Amino acid sequence: MQLNPLVISRKYKWTLALIVLALLAWPIYSQVISRSSKLQKPEVETPETPAAPAPTIAALGRIIPKDGVISISGAGQLADVRVIELKVQAGDDVTQGQVLALLDPFYSQQARLTRAQKRMAVAQSQLEQTLAGDAKLGDLAAQEAQIANLEAQVRTEVTEKQALINRMQAELVNAESSYQRFQTLYNDGAISIADLEDKQEEFEIAQAQLNEVEAQLENIQSTLAQQIRRESATLDKLAEVRPVDVAVAQAELEEATAAVAEAEANLELARVRAPVAGRVLKIHTQAGERVKFDDGILDLGQTQAMYVLAEVYETDIARLRPGQAATVKISALVEFLQGTVEQISPQIDQREIFNNDPALGIDARVFEVKIRLAPSDSQKVEQFIHMEADVTIQSPPESSSSSI
Image (cartoon, rainbow, N blue to C red; front, top):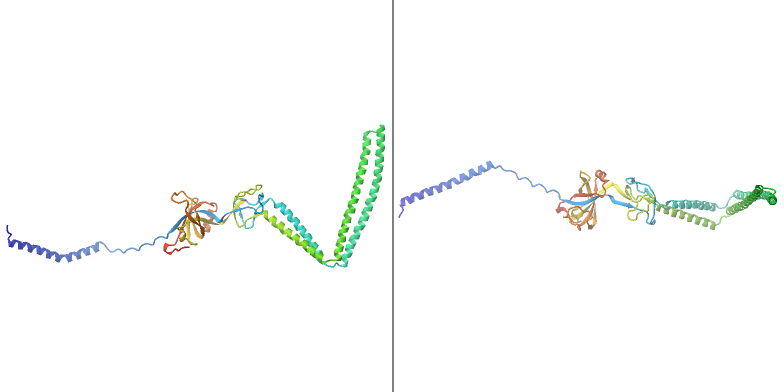
């Protein structure tokens, strides 16, 4: 079948016309679409990307006073001792050097110190007397007169006592004779036993009185003789002062002074003093009990400055610096506590603080970090020593961190 060439020619003309029309209309259509899209979608400025929040370091910790809990015991030289007096109670605030307790050697050491001080005073006086040099004539005369008075006193008192002894001896002879006579009468039945006992008592009293007076005479002779010898020795010292005497007196004083120092040191060992100012946290040994080897006498804490001892994983330690801010949360308080990193331990160790998270390794290696709490927050946690705390430490960006 053959197509009519005229028909074919008409079809091509219409197709060509449509193509030409489409090409002419396309630019206009594009402009309309573009304007329409601009009207429907106004330009919106792209906001700046917000800065990423500062990274943080999370750790577990516990509340402690400054320098931790201090266990107070007696001196190491005093083993197995007993507390005889406790000067403080739990909760008391104490100052540095304050006496907390007395140990059982205290009173005996105090007596030794008193004796040593008296010996030193005597030695000092003797040295001063020795160093006085040549005595004045008046001092020599006074000393000689003192000796003469003592000798006269001896003669007078001895004479008086001797006369009394002679009289009492005569009375004793009479009493003995009377007693013997009454014995004979009693044997003959002339007197009663009561009469005989009366005479026996008179005889025994006379004998006792005589013995007493004789003892007094002997004591007078001995005492006054000793005083005379002492005063005579003083007279010799007044008359002459030798260098050797000065050396001896000086040595005696030095020895007495050393004895006082030793007694003071031993007495101080029996006192238990506070090494720092703080608060008594717990009493382990009461008065009358022996000091416990493991616990000591009491626990002391510097609660005027409270800290958090945090355990930071070794992988985070490079991002820590003293001075970084920290936030602390404990279960006993609703509010968060604020603190500052103060010290980072240079030694790595294993964890000692654990929680119930099984994902945290028990054998993890950590650094101890001390965080000082703000003064107002320190007062809030004074009663929560050793309580567990959740710690969040603000750290610098990774790019600015460097190895410590």
